[in-house]
Length: 504
Image (tube, rainbow, N blue to C red; front, side, top):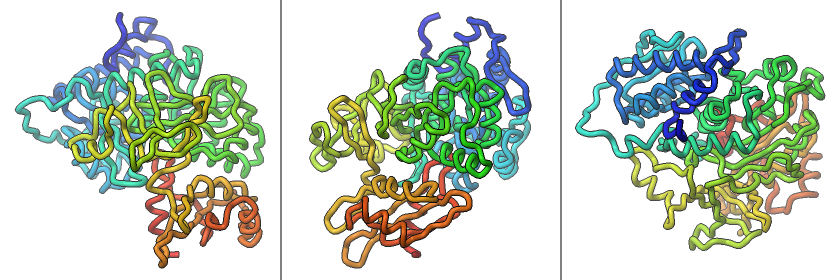
C-alpha cells in the first residue's frame, strides 16, 4: 500500500498490520480495536450515503470525544465529505452559527458521550443514528449544480476559536493533516506501545491532528476521554500505562491546582515519557511547576488552526529552561516580519509571524475577503502573532498583535506582565488586557485566578511588580476572578475580559 492520500487510509494501513490490536480505551473499561473502529466507520459511511451526503458536502459534528466521532471523521473521508467539528459545550447560538457558516448538509450529535451534545440534539429534533449513542438532525436540501471548489482536497473545516475575533471556517486539506500526523508522530517517537491520554477535543486541530491522526499513523493507543478530569488523568498515569500527555496550558494549570488541593506533590506515572503543551502561550512559572511535579521536560510548540498542526516544536531529548516553542518542523517556515512594511526582520527583533508550508490552509470557507486579508505575497499567511527568532532558529512567541497595549508611547506585551503576575504568591494564572484611557493611551488591566485557598495581598503584589516591571507596564487595576473565562479548547477569552475591564 502506498503513502496515504486521504485520512481513512491511515486506518486501512493499521488494519493491514493487524486489526485486532487495541486502539481506544474508554472510560467504562472497554477497549476497541482498529477493526472495531473500522466497523463503526463502515456503518457511518453507509448511513451518510443513505442520507445522500456526497463529496464536498459539510457534515457538522457537535461532539465530545468518543469512538463514534472518530468513526464519523473517517467515514466523511471515505465519502469525500468535509467533517466540521464543533465542541458540544458551545452555546446554542454558537452551534447554530457554525452550522449556518458551514452550510452543513446534516448535523450529528455525540449524545451518549455528552449531555451538552444531547441537549443540542433535542433542539434539532435529532433521531437515532446507526452509530451507537449518536443522533443526527434532518438532512438539509442543497442545490448541487456542481461540486464545490477544492472538493477533493479539503478534509475538514476547523473553526477558529474566536478568542480575538469572529470565528472562521478554515479549510484544511487531507495532505496537510496527513503530513502533520507523520511529523507529530516522529517528533515524539510515537510507537505502538504508547498510550496517549486523549481528552483534547477532536473538534480542534490539536485533538484531530496531534492526537487522533498521529496515533493512527503510528498505530499507538488512545485512552479516550470526552472531558478532562484530574482524578481520572492521575489514575490513568498511575495504573493504565499512559506514556504521553498533551494538552493546553490550562490543562496543566488545573491539574496542578487539583493536586495542590489534594496534597499530591509528585503523582506516580511509571510509563510517562513525553509531556507536551500547545494551543496557547506557556508561562515560565507553569512550565517549571509541571516539570518539578513530573520530573520531566514539558515540551512546547507553536501551531494554529490555519496551519494543520504545529509549525515549530521543541526537540525530543532537549531540555530548555526558557519557554521557546522550538524549531521549524519539516515542511514549515516562519518569518518574523515588520507588519507595516512586510520586511523580514533579523534574528532577535520582534515582529509579526508569517507562516507558509505543507500544512497551510486552503483559505477560509466562503470568505474570500478574510482569506485575502490574511495572505501575503509569496504564499505567506500573516498570523497576527508576535514573536522573535533567535540565531539558533528557536522561536519565541510573545503575544498577539491585536492584544499589544500602547502605554505612554511604549509597547506593552501582555505576556510579559502575565509572567510577572504568575510569579506572585498564590496566583494560579493571569490574563492582561488593555483598556482605553481618556488621554488616548491604554491602561494595563490584570485579571488573576488564585490557587485554592489563596488570597491576594495587593499592596505586597504591587511592591513585587515594581521590582520586575517598568512603570509603564504596571497594571492600573488587578482584579481577582474565581476562574478566568476560557473556550472549550482551554484558551483564555480575552475579548470577554476586555469587556469586563470597561466595567471596572
